Length: 440
Image (cartoon, rainbow, N blue to C red):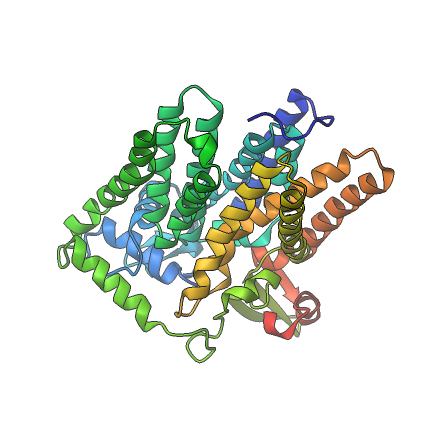
């Protein structure tokens, strides 16, 4: 698989400096004031508590597989050895723990997602500029930032799913096919062991294999079956063992029946069920973000709002949706012209976008905007590709369009940053950022 287009590119030195710089920015944004809000934020009431339950040997039932709670538990154990200010310590998890202890490992893990997305972009095109732009865009997204700053599980679903995808692409480019295919299966199994919808990343690979069956016919099918079916299943099953040992009330099959029954009880995207339920099609325009935390106080007779909103960078979000729609148009155009110059890139992004989004159309339970994270990554990759082609176009208007797009996305990120980090805002400042009533 050769580079899909021949344009000027950034140098290797510039690329390394850029990627390191973006990783440092991602780390800083995720760790800055991470210990604020001495409470359990949103679903920390489940995942931080469940993680601590492992450490104190307390039985519990969880409606999702256990991997993310294992990781958070490791973070709590390590973080509990770090000195903490008394005003950041609470016993809401069942033990006296600092907020840093149950949040830091998510922040650290989430910092790698922009880099992995950049690595995917590079493997798809062998273009360092595309990789940098994709990384830059993910760093400037609000939903990935918020999800990384609290003890939640969605960040691990995407992290392991993307690592599985990356290893799959690496297996196509290197001579070490076996090693990377096995790693791909392992990481995909880990993603499913966070949430069942991690299967979408595996389904995306299956769809690509089907659509490019002529290419994959050259590979060993038994090797593909072992790597992408047996190893994910084995990894998923193996990761349940610690939980089942510590929670013996259900065996492996019984716990899956209980999880399925739990989700079947959560009916419909009705605000009476949960005020922030949102149907899958509304995610494309970010119709209903979620307030993870909201607190007010009065300072000098003025109401100050501390709000953490699980929402994306609006401009990045909407442009990404527009870009994936354009990708469908490009795909049809290429088929009509019977050209395959961009075919693998288009099919890879479209296939993974659809497998991460469309299954939610058949889900009857209450769903939330964070369920879009898996599909959103591929929409961002579509936008990054467009920006890359604009920046390196011979036409000045396209170059200007690419530069302006990046600047506006960066400005939008800074503007909405206070509601990602929970920084103090006046009522007027808060209202200016909640530009639609349904965002509140």
